[in-house]
Image (cartoon, rainbow over all chains, first blue to last red; front, side, top):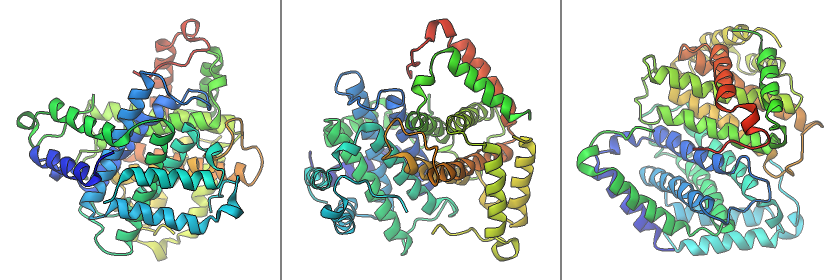
Length: 112
Length: 112
Length: 112
Length: 112
């Protein structure tokens, strides 16, 4: 994978070149994100639980929909001035503390 | 931002250390992704359209929820053997061709 | 509006006549529900906040997508043996108690 | 189940008594709907595919979250002047024509 700041910057340039910044308020981008997540879930909804989507066309389609989701996540972080990579590493570190491996081994954390 | 392969690898190590790989089939991870997207939308649902979430605690909370969304996107790409960064750049390039800047300036593309 | 038990029963008959009951486990139906929610959000994502979708084709499309969402909500309730109407009235009554009108007038409840 | 117009009317009265109508534009309600869908998916995400949530507390929680989803669906239909029940029956009839039982028996329709 390459530098995520490049993805953010290309994404921003793409938006600015089309004068679409005016559409990119947080609530609109969130709805667009949900739309892409929905396109992704539709690929998997009727597949068996064990399916891993390793064959085409599903593999390529899943990559395209995941990419669309990522693009909106990166764009949302950009307009909200969030350092997404930093936030993700901090969250993962927090989870490591919150769910000690020896206490949660093989056991899904319950939602509270 | 730092290297996204590190995020993927840390994510994978976190999962393996807890023996949670068995929970991470695509459909389960998709439902978890939706859960995190829902936590993100709840932060913004009653805010004015113009709100940009620049103040805390909202700014930090939005970063945490976006991070959770990214973590599941990265984890899904990992189990599906998708090069997420490559897929995102390809998608963005495809959109540049599909929506020429001079034809779509200031005009949102219609969903078809 | 007509009797919601008829909608549930027609929905169930539609599924059984096609031998699709085997696809309708909770996780699969939830992913299908998300897909329909995504089709609904895509209709509104780039519209102004004030848009109310009173004109066609948007009005009809919104009705169709909301209907799809409802159909999966009703189907999920059916397979989970949930009396959806009873649950909805109980929830609404609970919210009336939880958010007394005189304390929450004009003020959105914060997510906690 | 009881009359869905009563649910719509109670829902509307609840909103008006709190002066929350001003928060209920379509985009905000859609984000709230997604939030409730996310709370529902979180209940099921790590459960086995075969789990049917017949025991409490999960059964009751699923009912509460499904109710929240329904409440926002009904509220959205109300502000958009959509007859939800009529739309749902029309959609179900359309699906019966689109997916003839003898052609689609035991076979999930592909997303196109």
